[in-house]
Image (tube, rainbow, N blue to C red; front, side):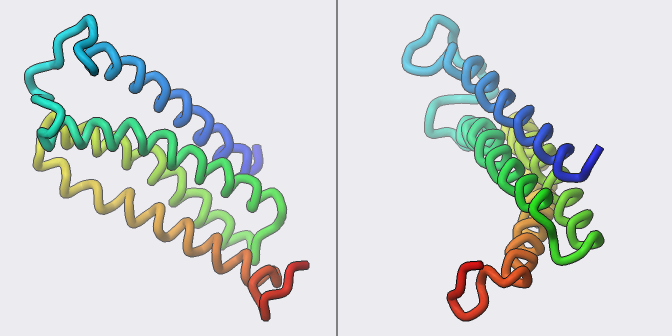
Length: 143
């Protein structure tokens, strides 16, 4: 299995989890049929905000991972850079939403969010650098 294939799969699974968590959260939103779990609190509470951000992170990071998979297929500045971008993006895509949901339930977990967030930053930085090295950013030219 190629590196880009793994990222594409993780990205699409993340998107499905975003929809699934949205469906669950929708049960108690807008005076839904299920009461809001007590540990989440009201709409403005930090726990509830973290849970909503975890739900959106599944979508956003999934989209970024799918975009990265396309760049990996189109060629990278080198196999080592491609591997680093792939691994760090998958780590961030999986663990950032999970730590957000975890922090909603147990606030000290919020300190662990820095690791997957930094991993996403590394993946996107490597990808941006690789795209520029392929000539797409030099002198404003498009090849």
